[in-house]
Length: 71
Length: 334
Image (tube, rainbow over all chains, first blue to last red; front, side):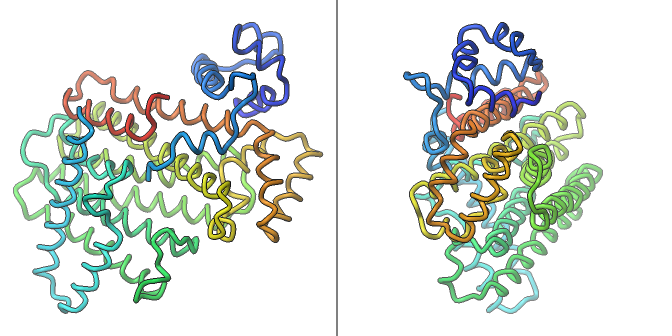
């Protein structure tokens, strides 16, 4: 499974997403997903950065706003 | 390093670049009228001191890479000037090809065809500036290496652009490869050109080229995000020019959706191409697919990979720190 497909699973399965926050190794193993060490590290950081206090993922608009004005 | 200090370096680099181009034009055989047109076009496309933005920091890449790889004598401004001219020309041609309104080209005394001709002039001036280095007191072997690197990298970038312009729906892997071929190659050139002049130390050259390649990908991702921001503001111009099929968020979404939903999403895209005012339906699909998390993860991956290339102990500390600052200014703490 590619990183993109794992991200899709996270966005459609809130339990999986919540488990990834606390136990990424266990959550991935349970689903039979294998990612490289780097991919796991990047995804965990991405998830931390993009999860709101209510557990929902941020939108494209919110990511876009983070980097506004670079040009 | 204080932000102001970095900006003053950028402004100084722009001054040097402009002076270098000006002295080339002064001795060129073209008419004063055409020199004047080239100059006006160049200044119109370049930032003013007060408007220097984060992306303008990239103008420092050739010089900093030279210094990072141990270059000690004066860095030839011709290299920065040539790279900058190629940058402006490529950006200009891209804007004309995509009918973007970023440069507001429609409200200038020139037609699109004239702008393309001016872009060609920038290319030839850039090339001449590089060739002139052969007559100066620099290591000839290193200069030749830079002279070869420019067309090789630029041709690769053109290949990427051609693929981008001609391809329809593409896979995520192909899009990422395109990103590296276009933007990655171009910024890799900025850094590797400086490193080559410093002395062809292989690991240093490799790290500078790698840093530039990842920085280029970061800039392209930020560019996609900027389009997104304008889209969600409902800006009419982005709605009419948006390439709904070929942006990272769409390509990711098409990649990950199960086949039935993929068919439905393709129908949404077709509808929004014909009726851009229905963009909110498209946005809802993209957001549901988790595109924001994917793009953020990709950005983190590119930033970390760029940082890794700066870990080389051979690199000189001060320019290394400035390259790191440029990265931080672009993406902040990620």
